[in-house]
Image (cartoon, rainbow, N blue to C red; front, side, top):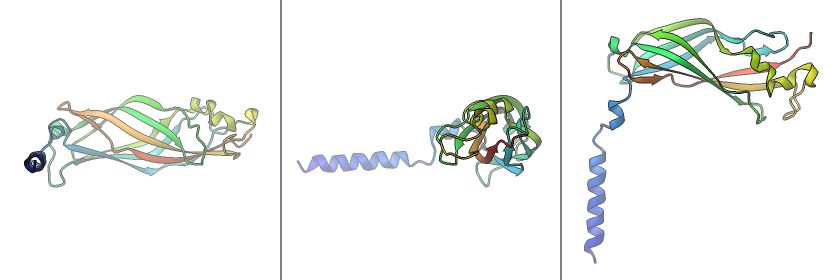
Length: 187
């Protein structure tokens, strides 16, 4: 009887030792590059009535490529072609209904260990101003968010960009949250 617990303990220790080898099967399939996004300049105040037909954009946005291993180096096989932008809104004002998710295919090249500097980059389409919850802010719909009772809606747009290295490995940017305040000033 005393042998069964000892055998179980030995088996558990052997399993633990085998799993601590430092390598993982994921290490072989992931890209060696980490992509980060920096929003350098943007206007967080969006008048959906005054900006009718004008998409939400970021004035200056930078994408940086760095080695995943801090001491590592990157070669041209780690150059990245970013292809799909996914923007996921969430409410930051206590409301629960957020604007729809938006995805768009737009190509950007980021050299290994380099950066891409973008100007006036579209991150959200103006046609979504006409959908809930933002459409509640329009004068013809009462001009008030029914969930909060406010005349504005604060949303965070979570931006993540997906692509592949030139060697074919999937990669995405570290997600970044960008805060916006949507409102409608009547003409």
